[in-house]
Length: 151
Image 1 (cartoon, helix red, strand yellow):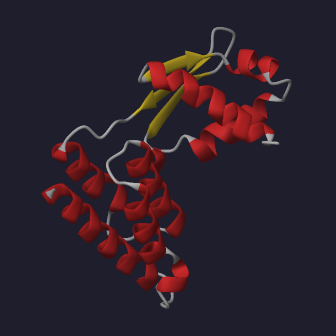
Image 2 (tube, helix red, strand yellow; image 1 turned 180 degrees about the horizontal axis):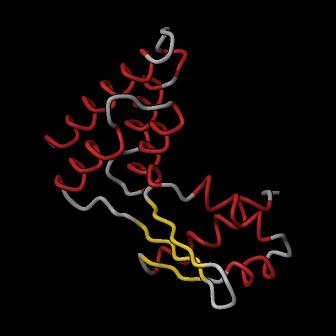
């Protein structure tokens, strides 16, 4: 059985399939899942990150809300922006794998391509010390994303 974080993520993503922007109240979500608001915060901060293709905005207080915006990659300009904005000169394994998962979820790459990219970006494939490992990982990811841009 899925854990609570998985259930909350699945619920939010289901609603985001219908619209690129979802606005909900933290208290309403906490009540729906019978959990503390901090558990909602955990899901938002770990599963709805820019690397995974989301921007989360919130306003606290009585009329507070959470707004989740899904960032879609629609064209080569969007992919080029992702390369510049999110990869940078160095990138962690978690951030790189989140980008690959995003590309797969948005059907820019297929399952096989995602598996190949993930295997190249994992720390065991890059036997280097930090920060060199993150720099090499960024360079490899940029090269793969640039190749995707060509097709």
